Length: 353
Image (cartoon, rainbow, N blue to C red; front, side, top):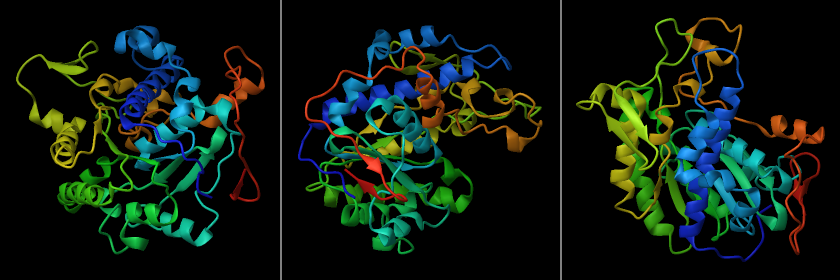
């Protein structure tokens, strides 16, 4: 079922709130990491949060974000980092949905088309918010499945969403790049995929104007024992400016490994088409101890397969709802809002108001 509603919100304030949500994800990851008793010394969560935007993030509540999502769908499209954001948003907004997930449409055939993607199995699901808004994840690990791809129904994820799932007021929040480093062919396809997405946006923005691209966070290599992730060397994150400071000449190889090359490409390409690129890379460079891996999983085997140096720890709806079900402090609902309604899931996956 498509989200209903006619509320139109200008993009700049919405973009600002989405930037703040990115920081929420980082802070929650740090909270999880700081609670673990193993591995190297962790960041101070409070100190890190206070350093971002003068500590403004500490005052952000779900009630601040919800009005910008009501009456529209926020489509999170991309690889596992988009899944991170989907789960974190589900957690952050848990007072405004039933903690159940729905299919993105009652059209089962269309849902299967959205999930049938080359390169990696697709995934598509949503949480329904008060007053008709939704947050949906579309797992599309490779950028070249989004447009100009005959292996995808409709020619790509974006035209398929516009034709069968989305409304003009919806927001498409896209992030990809990591999977394109897995082979020479995938890497060669990255810039053309970005160019194609830019051209697609230019052609469709008269009706679907809200498209953003989120930078990929940093990748940190496993240490020599493959037991934890190694910090970046010779580079420091400057919280006041949001920039990286380098102790000496820029190490091109390290920048490649960390993923800066992918993000520079995105900035170069999308700036020509008017697609905003949301910062997510710089602040993640110092977060080498926030990855999933042996250091995060006591008792894990010391193998490369258990040291995921790319994926970050992510909170899930389940881990958030458990303490709230036990009525622990800090889980109270936000003040009631006039005219809102809840959505729930019926059997199985179909959504109803």
